[in-house]
Length: 526
Image 1 (cartoon, rainbow, N blue to C red):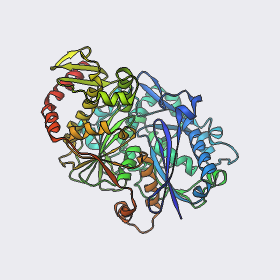
Image 2: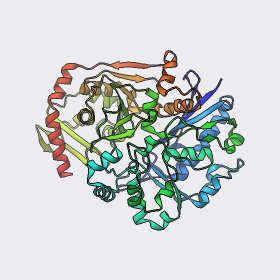
Image 3: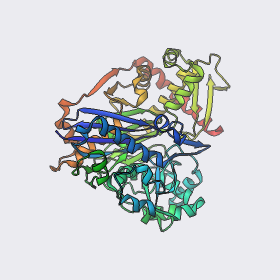
Image 4: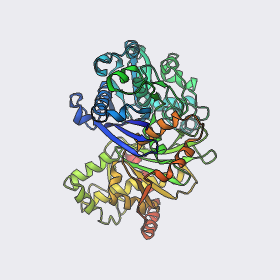
């Protein structure tokens, strides 16, 4: 029996899923950064200082050792039969290798922990992550270079976004030039994990490249003009390799993992992708499927074929992780589960059962917008409440905030999804930690007017990584879609959670114009 390992370095955890040949999940494990690595002082996996949000790079390294130690200790028989590894990283985050770090990678000592060997491996020890909102100036500069926000979206798939890697690099290039000049190589979080496993620099996959504002969305190659604008003539060399397509072999695993943790020498490393791309792969989406991932960030993903894909200044058009000619349409919201949790703590006694009970309250003519972090869609921050279309400081019944935040988040998804594609969605596939809450899913179903399904198991990104690992080891040149079809009868499949109350859907449809008007008012005052 052969096994396939998928890793997911997300904001708060390093998770793994191991599957067998029939795609059955045989093992899941996770390292929680706040709980298991408290010495790094993170909160929800990050360190926030105003709009600047980072994670300690060495924390991720230490988590890799910790995870593999657990696997080796408790599941050595499975670990010894892992044939391939792929996975995902939180999108947009970046890692800055020093010359010393690159050299150390090539001579890892299995007698020492990774973190001990890579203590001085990084020219910048705090990695900018997707929650960072400090690069607005760089975004506008990049858009201006090519003729505006829509022009940049047409070229790269997205307008300038603060969290996108190119704008993060540009900020470092202009404000921390000495550290930038000491940087030998820049990885994305995803290619960083592959780099650790290979013991040498790994390329980004094309899907990840489309989350940088640096890659041409049509050719899947770095766009020289954008590279030079963001990082000077040296950036091309610091990125090193052009983006690659998913499903190829990058090389064999470094001997460090063979000798220290018992992985087989023949274990192959495949390109790692973004967490959203891996989630899409785990669900093997077809046209008409819409993934709503309810996690630290909330995301909406749709599979778009050529012709149905349209770049906009609100959504992202990204390269598909397994179809070189396809695209992934994506909406991303910073204020997901953590903001819902903030409202729960303030209005529902920090208890989810109380929160769910309060969801039954009718908001009537009350509308709220809740952005505890700088939001992406729309670009706003703060809490805003309206009754009968007029701003109020607080609702007469403060408990209404509970339903108001959920309605507001899902109404935004409904409106932006319609703008992103003319393809009519047929069903919602819910994933992420908050998808375990059926009361949230009922409101989601009613607002979008679609049935909601949920796949068993919540670690969809690491499962997608495991499937990508298997795909990369195959020698028969079949498509990812065909590989999935071969095992459809063995998969757990999607379970119907709820169907929409179409009368409620009509009510929400009638509120769309008012929601848009109020949101525009919020953006004008934010």
